[in-house]
Length: 205
Image 1: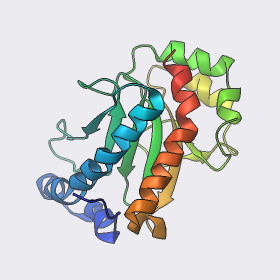
Image 2: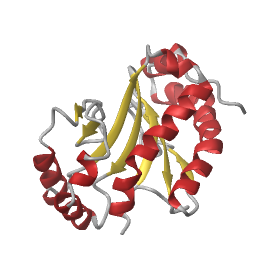
Image 3: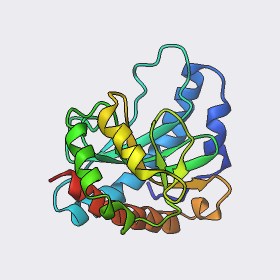
Image 4: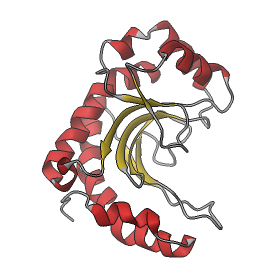
């Protein structure tokens, strides 16, 4: 499948009532696009990083009642799973597409990585544009720009709080015309992940 971008129908998926009904549309409408992106981006990431990167598409298998309010795909060096490792994400909320380098609470060594970031925060500030955004909770769609956030406090929370998380990347509004241009969006994804690569490499040492 050729990737031709996202449209308003994709974002309207999150207005559908009912777990089964919404999941059916996610599987039929959005997941094939994640796969088409992955056919390109997994190889690009592997070339940047120097080892194979595997595509994981969220199944939302733990849900039994409430339909997901967002959905995503992830890229990781581990074929079996991504949540315990640094990973890249591409996903949708109802009003934006997100591109993340993600460190979530399920990582067993996040304390070590957090201290690495605190000791080398210039790797973040010198490589990432100030309009990139940071989230401290992957279950919420709110995020602050690098310019707005207190980076040290954010990293201390990630390091010391059991449920602390750190996600850094970009939000692209559902109304941004780049989303409907598949080639342009793939270029934007590639550029974003390349910008975040020094942070990823630091965390994988």
